[in-house]
Image 1 (tube, rainbow, N blue to C red):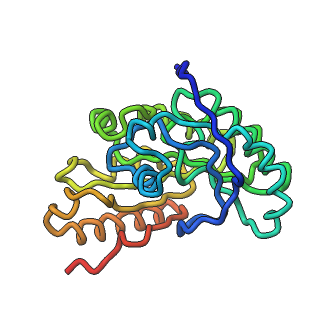
Image 2: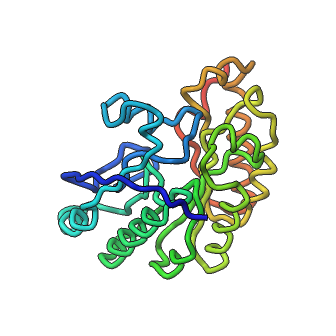
Length: 261
C-alpha cells in the first residue's frame, strides 16, 4: 500500500552528473534522502551527513523531492547527450521508494524523457518496480537489491523497504515482458551477521540477465568474522561460476575479491 506521507520539496541547480561508481556512467538523484532506513549502515546516508546535506538518520528518512527535476532535465539532456552511454536511477536515493507514489511517478517521467532522447536508463530499487516500466524503451535495464531471503533480517536491516518476495515478483513480471533485468547482491553480509546460503538467493533470481555482487563495508562485524576475506573470495567465485553456467553477465565490485592472507 502506498504511503500518504507529506513530502517536502527542494530545488537544485543541476541534476545529471558523471558518477564515480565503477559500473556506472551518468546518474540522476531527483530525491534527497530515502525512507527505507537501511542500517548496514547506508553509505549514501553517511555521505549526506558528512557533506552537510542532512543532519541525522531521521532527517535522511524523510525524502525531499527535487521539484524542478523536469525543467533541469530538459536543459541538461542536450548538454550531456553525446557524452552519455546511459543514466542510472539512482546511486544515492531510491527511484521507486516503497510506498511513495509521487516519487515513483516522477521517476517514470524522467526515464521517459531520457528514452525519448534515445538515452538508455538503468534503475535499481529496494521497492517494487512498477509495471508501467514495460511501456518504456526495451533498452532499459531494471534491477533490485537482494542480499537475503530472510524477512526477519530485512526488517532489522532494511526496515521500511519492500519485502523480498515482492521485489522478486515485480522483477520477474518485467522479465516475462521481455525487459532486461538484474540483481545487486550487495552489501552482502558475513555469517556472524546472518547465516544463509547464497545459493538460495541465486536460485531465486535465476531468470535475471545480470548479477552484481559486492561485500558489506562500513560494518565492524564483517572484519570480526574469521577469514572474512577468503569468505568473500569464495562467494565471488560461486557467483561467477553460477553466472557462467547460466550464461549471465556478472560484475564483482572492487574490493570484494582480495588477497585473503
